[in-house]
Every structure is written in C-alpha cells, then in structure tokens.
Length: 335
Image (cartoon, rainbow, N blue to C red; front, side, top):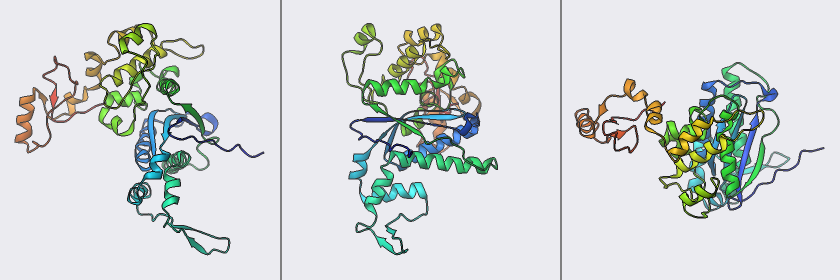
C-alpha cells in the first residue's frame, strides 16, 4: 500500500508543524551538530518562500512551525527567483526544461520560471533540502553511511490563530518537557532561546505570528491568560507577551513530562514576561571578557572615533533599561 499523498494549504489558511526524527531514535546530535542545523535553517529560509515562526532542534529530532508563502512565490519576479536559487545552489544553473524518455531535452516555454516557482515555493522541498543537506554533512563528518532520518517527515496542518500560537508554545517547551533545562530560554537551539541570546539573528529568521485581538492585554490576562492577542513584528510587547504565554503553559503539569517550577512561572508573570535585570545580565556576561570596551554612551562613542569605528554606534547589551546607562559597548556579544 502506497503512502498517502500530503495535503498542503495556502498561506491564508495556516501553517505546518514539521517534525522529523532520527532513525532508531538515537540521541546523535551534539551542540555543534545542532548549531550547523540552525545555520542551514537560516540559510534555506532565505532561499525558499517560507516563514519560520518557531523551532526546536533536539538531540534526535526537530520541530519547525512554518508557513508556506505560495502566493509570494507566484508573484515573485524572475530576478528574485534566480537570486534565491543561486543562494541555495551556489554556482549551479537552474533547470530550464526536462528530458523525455528518449533523452531529448524539451525546454520550458518560459525558460524555467514556473519550475522555479514550484520548487522554491514548496514547503516539502524546503524540508527535503534541509534534511538531505544536513545528512550529507553529518555522515561525512562522522564517516557514517546509511539513512540518518527515520520515516518521512510529518507535516501537521495548523490553523491560523490560537492553534498556531499553541503549537509555537508546544515547540518552545520541548527542552523543558524533556527535562533538559528548567528555564525555556536556557536552551540555545530553540526559537525562544535564540530570541533571548541573539535578538538580531532571531529577527532575521523568525516571523512573529499575527493573532486576532479580543480586547486589551491587561483585561485578557485578568480574564483568561491564553486569550488571543495582536502579535506583530514591530510590537514592543511581542516577546514579553509570548514569553509569559510559554511560561504559563509550561507550568501546567503533564504526567510523564517535566514542567516549569511554579516559582519560575510566578517570577516571569510578575515581570509580565519581560526579562529582568538579572536574567539579561546572565545572558550578556560575554561582553565583560570579550568586548573591547564597556561604559557610558559618550565614552564608547569617543573610543569608536579613536579606533576609526565611528560608523558603528554604541549599543547597550542590557537593553533599554534607564538604570543601565553604563552598559554600552563597542559591539554586543551574546552567549
């Protein structure tokens, strides 16, 4: 019996929860392997017409919440399609036709444009390329042969709205439920962990979900903590609102799984999901040992000019905290 054909939906309908596991369930991936997988995810998300909302790279599987931008692919110019293809395949020429049974080349009337639209606009092709590229790299690194991944990846259709938000939270909670970390942001290879450690890097990869509003934030939180909210890319509260959602959900006990300690949930709720000074300090310690200088804005600006780096403005590695006027640096380093 053949395997069932996948069902794909438009970007206006929803997203996909993509899951793939290592063959045999072995815990194969170490920290460097996970980092390379994340680098591939960043690269391929720029090549294919997909938006990544959440991810978690575990030792024997991965989760990705992604939306396929089929309409964007249909409207893309030939120049944009070729640009993305060159990012993906480097010096390889894009296909402009096909071969028949006799080996005769039959060129596409449009020069291969629709073929490119179909390939780069396919979520399935995106996952295949991601897995195959990582498999080749992994097998070569460890002198390994054979299949790395188990059965074909699973793609669960996720409706727009609360279902997407719930799925995103589920993905970010994976390291906590697996009892790897006690705080969600302590895991480096998840979407929430990336947002805390490297906001700039996260903004290039991750696309926040847009949830329809049902009222004011404070009113919703008072009535029901899981009420849908407006989460937009330029929203100052996006991260803190989402982080509070994750911690509240993670504090719910599930038999057979670890959960977030009640005191940690209370701490995050008390700050309305925002990172406290102590938490921010914990993730920015690298600046004290590897940065060029730390101090007030005027001192860093002066040093930048002396070092001919005046085009790089001083940046605060502790965020926009009025009590941290001393926390400017020549560059921001994150763990």
